[in-house]
Structures are given as structure tokens and as C-alpha cells.
Length: 238
Ligand SMILES: O=C[C@H](O)COP(=O)(O)O
Image (tube, rainbow, N blue to C red; front, side, top):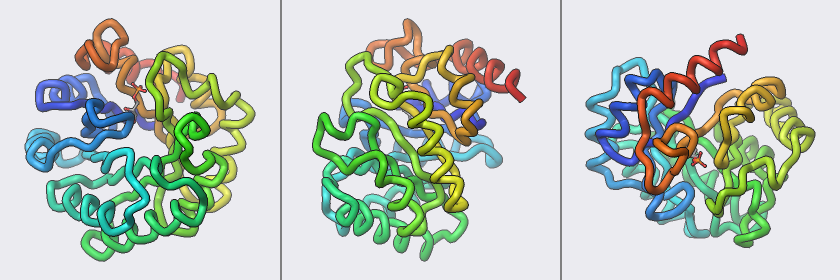
């Protein structure tokens, strides 16, 4: 299981790299759960990240505006991201989510066939009127995305496990795998929740809060010690 860590700036990116993250996921929590950061922040982090380490960028908790989101995808790509994550927030159903993702995939793959596209839904989609988490694997598959992901839309201390139990998450991972895609799970994931996610075959776990000082995704900062502890724990499962 790969460890994706979400820094907001160069300083936190360095901590993520030194701590041993597998994927450095540039994000801007001020703009939401999958808030987008600025192109120059993505470029700077790409420059400081070793070539063999993936740099991910979130396009935001995106609206149902396929053209706008496609243009954002192009921006992330040209800024150096290898991994493009789309938070399907403003898409309220399967068709809308598929339309957005199909256009993002077209944009990304026609410019860099090796780049990875992640279709992300939310375990608590019902709280914000977003597309159901159960539609995400099929949206990922039909759009040509590489991963189906779930995070949480509202960061109020509740975790992904407050909305989906381990059997639900297993179903999500298995459906995703049945399409030949990889799965990613996030949402205020705690240290003790890593093993259950590993056991159900989750391919990528996304973390910010648990990698920050005080476990606080907003007021804390990513620390290399916390990242290294998470990484060591994940490695111990193999
Ligand atoms: O992609 C993963 C997110 O950054 C998770 O953040 P969080 O652990 O604070 O919910």
C-alpha cells in the first residue's frame, strides 16, 4: 500500500519527502478537502522532489464544469504533476461525474499518456449533495481514469470510517479492482486505521491530518517524524 501525503507548501513537501512518502500530493486545504494549490507551488515542489517520487496535484472540489476542470487539469500537468486528482464535489450524479472525468482523462492522456488520473468521490457525499461514493468505481472505469478514490468532503473530525464500514470499503476496493483499476482511500485516516485498509487491499492511502503536528490538518504542519512513523507502519504490513 502506497502512502500519499498532502503538503501545502515547500516546507511541508520537504518533510513529506524526507519522511519517505511514496506520493507527494500538493493541496490547498483553504479551498476545501481536495482544494487546489497554485501552479507555481506545484512546479516548485516538482523541482525539489526526486524524479522517482510521484508528485500529485488536486484540481479542487470541482464544480460540474467539464471545460473549467479540463483546463485546470492542463494547468496541473504543465506545472509538473504526474498524478491528477479530481474531487467530484459539484457533480451530483453519475452522468455529470462521468462527463467531467471523461474530459479530464482526454486532456491529461493526450498530453502525457503516462500521467495518472484519479477520480475521487466522498464517503460523506450525502452531506454536500455530491455523486454517490458507490458510483465512483464505474465513473473511473468508464472515463478511462486509473484510480477510484474516496475522501471526506467535510473535515470536522469524522473519518471515512464514520460513513463507510470496513465491509463497504472492501466492496469499493473489490469493485475497483474488478475493473482493473487501483483504489485510494483517505478521510482523516488515523494510524490505527491503516492496517484495516491494507487488509482489504487498498492500493493507496491518503493522509494529511495524521502526518501533521498535533494531528491537526489545519493548524499543524506535516512533520517528517510523523510521516516516517506512518511509512514504517505501512511497510511492516508487507
Ligand atoms: O488525499 C488525502 C487527504 O489529504 C487526506 O487529508 P486528511 O488525512 O487530513 O483527511
